[in-house]
Image (cartoon, rainbow, N blue to C red; front, side):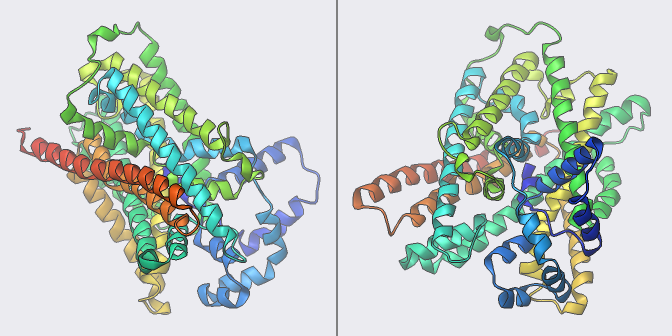
Length: 505
């Protein structure tokens, strides 16, 4: 996430509407226009909020029961403005940029260590296989969502969990009996995904600012001290409830990430690379599950595909052989393979859990890259956390807490979740193993197993017998790959983590 793409912009606040409306009626300078576009583009990086989903799928009477009185009043008073806002669609180029941002995160920095667990050729072939399967699953999820939307009157958009529930209900029989449970399970894994990713983010930030501080101040602290120092700023940023104050951070984070990637590639190619004969073409089969977990963690953007596709001006351009989705994912796969191949070729067995830690600690340019990535990931943390609260707030807090106690309960939940997340980061200091574990558990489920079940159920009642058998066999294979990757990857990753704890420091 990064899963930053999992949130969608909220309605503009009451105070901002007159200014926004006036801005559309007057002639603006080139500078003002650029600033407006950057701000609007930043809002779009935060996709699918529960508010907009409810606006599109519910009538006024139903919406009044789901929204607070202030929210409902704001909606009624701003219907014309909302229609304008919903008209803000994105071009194919913008869609590609959003998909790139939704998939490129910490995972790209762990590709060299992932490649070391598979070998140069094994890693390339493995990445191609993971890319093909995950891209196919993204396609099937989008197609299944379209099919379910077409069957629901008055519904313009279904998110991941709603698509799953609708597909299971449409299939009938035992599928329908588990529809609500499966939809909730998807949301549970999305929550786990974000919390786990944020633990990885904080661990990354702490381990990357450590060498900079040690270079200039030498306090002799370990990474846990830096995590403890980050607790207060993390809690403060995650207590910001208004999305419009967080969305600019997304723009800054993406700029910093892409500049940082350029610096990393500069250091990789600054000196001649070793011969490929100095690195193994294939690694031990026992290490492949760790590679699989790390690789599939990197392709973490399946949950952003539906929200982004929903905002496209030309939605039919999303799919197809040379469509937006394939174009974006091929670029991402090439970036991952290049980073993994050349990073491992450059540093060999000395490659660190994040390639940023292989950069020369005394180089100002390398230090600037560490600062850029640390800031980018820190900014992304609050946006990722918004996804968690967007699920927990309406589903777990609001139904069980009196309205007068909702705000204190929500802030308490925010604080406790952040303490838990940073505690998790402080417990497991090995970034590569933590990434592999999370990839095996969450992404095998969200990227492979769930889409296989959703596509099968979405076509269960309409496929011919021959087509149903073929689709079931194909999706059974994908589900089995995800299940084996989840079980074996989790087991191997936990085993390696236990071994690390048992090693003397």
